[in-house]
Every structure is written in C-alpha cells, then in structure tokens.
Length: 448
Picture 1: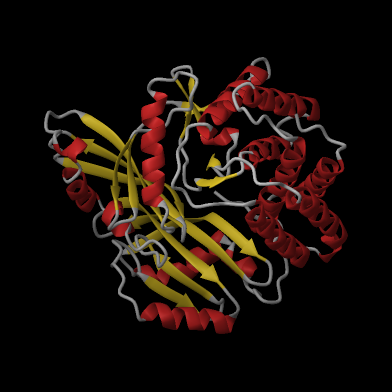
Picture 2: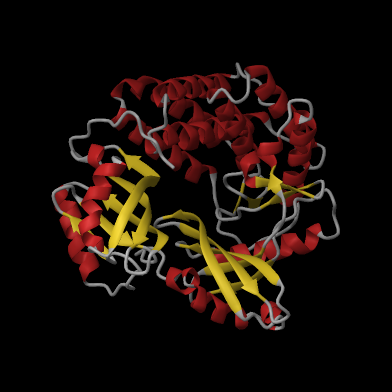
C-alpha cells in the first residue's frame, strides 16, 4: 500500500491531499455503497502523479456485506484532473456502458474534488477485464484453450495479483480439474496492442530454454485471448530472486543474470515493435519536464544530464537490433530450480541491447540510493553483471552506449518515480541519483 507523507501543493490539483487521505475517501465513498454495505477500511494502492497535470490512484477496500454477513474486498480506481477537465472526462464516460460491480457504483464523479472513479472490473483502457476477472467467465475461456480443455476444468477461483489501472491487470486463477486436482494459472490483460507478439516471444523463449540451462526460462504461455487482450500462463513455482539476494553470492547471481540476458538478446526472436535511442531520449525529455515542474531548482542539473545523454546516444551508430525487455532488473526475476526465470514481458520490443544492460545497472544504483546496497556492493554487482553479459554477447558492452542508456534509465525511470509515486525522502533520492547520472555521463563512475 502507498503511504504518502508529504503531499505537494499543486495549484491545478487543489484537493490532492484529500485524494491520498484514505479515511477521507472512505467517508466520501460510503454513501455510494448503500446502507447494506459498510466500508471498514480504505487504503491507497497504486498512485502516480504528474505535477500540474493529473494524478491516478486505486483504492483497496475492505467491506462488510451486512445483508449476507460476509466480509469482502473491492477495488475502485480513479483520476484527478483540474475541474473543467474532470467534468469533461465524466461526461464522456457517462456515454459508455459499464458492468455493474458486485458492490458499489460502476462510475462516480466527485465534482468538487475533480475525481472520476470506476468500480472494478470497469476500466476504460482495459475493456476485456470483465472476461478474466469473473470466475465463471474465466472458466468458460479455459475450456476453450486446448491445453486446458483436456483437463476438463469444473470450477475456477480468481483473485487480483496486481492491477495497474489503465495499463494492465494480473489475475491468479485456481482451476479444479475433472480429476479433482488443482491447477494454478495467471492471466495478464494489457491496454496496449502488443500482447500477441509478447505471447509469440514468450513461446519461443520458453521452448528455447528447455534445451539451454543457462538461458532465462519463463512461465509457459498457454494461450492468447484476443477478445480480452489477455495472455494465459501456467504458474511457475519459484521465489523472488531479489528476496534471496545474499552479499556472499551477489557477484555470482549478477553474472548469472548477465549471461541470461545475453542469451535472450542472442535468441534471434524478431517481429517486435522497434525501439530506438531517440525513443529513450524522448522519455528522458518528458521526465525532465515533469521533474522541473515539480521543482524548478532542478532545471540546471537536468539540462546538463539532457545535454550529456544527447551527446552519448545521439552519436550512436546503428547497433544490433535484438529483443529487449525494456525494464530489465533483478526484481523481474525468479529463482527456479537453480535457474533464473523472467516473469514480466510487458514491454518487450526490438532495440539496442545496451538499453537492457543499462536498465539493470540503473536499478542497482537506485537500490544504492534507497540504502539497500552500499556503493562498493552496487559497483561490484554492476561489474559482475556486465562481465557475465560480455562472456556471451558477441558485441560486448560498448562504453558510450552503456553510459548513455544507464544515465537515461536512471533519470527517466527511477528519478521520475520519486515524483510520480511521491516516495518518502524523495527529494534526497532525486539529488543523489541526478549526481550519479552526471558522473556516469562525465565518465567518473565505472559502468563495467
């Protein structure tokens, strides 16, 4: 859950402090659920903030159904905008048909706050989620998947694993087979149109990993449901690799991750959306604009970072176009039977391999900024990871590209995250990571 300590004053979003106040929102929401339902607790879940523009959030609700005498959970999510824009959004949403949630309204507008809310399973950017969020509908979908139909599933229990409103939904489903045994599945519903290509990539990598113990494995993709824009996966048992990270074995683990990424890059998978250094620079420019709106005093250092990044990435000659993850980091990996498994394929594209290598290195420096790794350990981890990568990848880790991509990812993703999520001690983290980005671009911080 999100615990926001310092809410900025934003002249465009005057009531932001109310939106992130869980108890205030519980009181606001209660009348919309009727006398038969008591909202026992509301917590702020997902939260993203764009200074001067909008804020998005999800509320996780624990409720008591007085009529049935049962406790239940529910999710509503919403968007805060300046009042005129919020009113326009609400009028537009009223023209659409929405599924009636089990509890509460499908759509509600708090006009005075500038907030429009949707009750799960309604999401204007994820129109297929009612097909996978409701157990009966998911059971029918499972019966149409050849690999599952042979098991004659008779029942389904479904629960939310991760929901990012407007972007993606991950659900867990426990199927009861005809023989009484249970089977665990996961579904991923996307807002973008790349799901079919992600399914094809995962299938190719899963089959390739079966014959290569050094390759990153992944959950078995069972089907792509185009009508729901949803990927169906067989559960992969394992534990989060980041949770098992041990200072005594960190260099071994990093080298293993580097070799696994290199094997993914050399897999030969094609047919993905292209992604270039120009796309990365556009992301950096957007992030810099948001950061400067948040704190104008950041302008000079952001200008220097932008100039350095443009010099490094703008000078790149065309490199190998490989399948890239786009947000590769150790938190994306599971430990499974002494192997590493990649579970998140949401951003797969075709691009420069240093985009992923830089992403991984940037996340290690982010862990340092969060005081989870000291500077020496972070540097040793980066060194071991890049060495493992170079031992497999024929193009190695060209330093200008690696410096540029690492700095860009550090600022565009991790520095910006401190503002978008209003992270605790965010200003200190921002300053530290911007200094790291400058050192990377100036050549003062080793990248390999």
